[in-house]
Length: 77
Image (cartoon, rainbow, N blue to C red; front, side, top):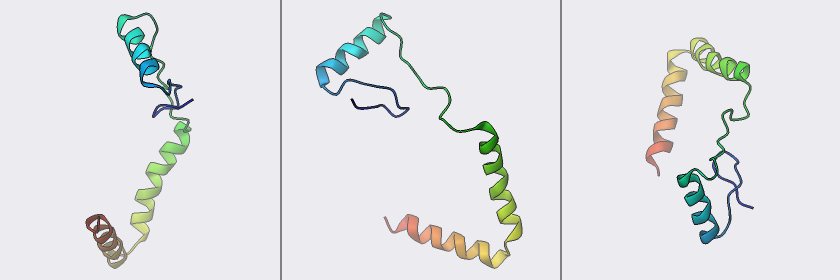
């Protein structure tokens, strides 16, 4: 069975999906949303700190080179 963006189970066929949406709209069933994305909150905080620490360690030239590479990649699309 296909899953939605947050891992919830949804019907594969169009009619089944329409019925599910109608049931949610009328309040017959509730839409199940995943509150936590499966990531540990402590790990998320460490990830936020890591980017700042990495930038503090780099020289200005290194940051400029990384920014240029990112810009070229972004605009190459």
